[in-house]
Image 1 (tube, rainbow, N blue to C red):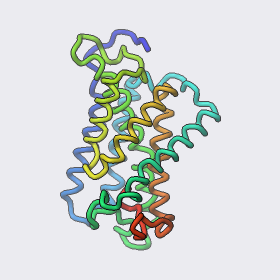
Image 2 (image 1 turned 120 degrees about the vertical axis):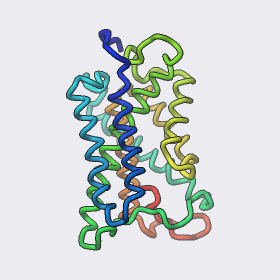
Image 3 (image 1 turned 135 degrees about the vertical axis):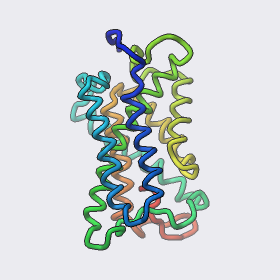
Length: 245
């Protein structure tokens, strides 16, 4: 995709929301547990506000144009891919329970008391299945994937088309995506990001990848809420999905 020459390097609309999310996560981890419900609302709210502000300033032209292929059929396909990638994310931990982290770090929907569980789950859905796919795909698939192609030259990454395959951009994208997750998730981060990138090359649409990402995250949350005890790992232990959300 060709764009008119623009001033500056154009990094801030992609980097600022992503870094803000990381910083807010670090701050939230240092606050008392009683602050967790407020952080659950404020963190995605602030990040989404930053994305919308940059978008209002004319950023993300690759996300503003008419969505290529976002027909009803295309949308259904994106949803199906998102669900398939949910299985990719879960299956290794069912087959190899030793990959799971030690108990104690899972999400607690009762953090504000039993009466507030629906509100807490709604806030988690908002942050996990809506906001995260937006800012993360803008950063990973639009910024990192393109800047990997031009970083050693004087070319502007904004002049690069989105979803153009190269081994280098795929490798860099995979590494950066994994670094944004905790080490025990890397076993599933690699296949998830590689397979979703292949779908991105096919769809050539950021919105399509946001749907895929959102469906995967939303499905993981739904499994945590409704799937308790549905599955057992290979050792016969009932499987809990709360670690994933």
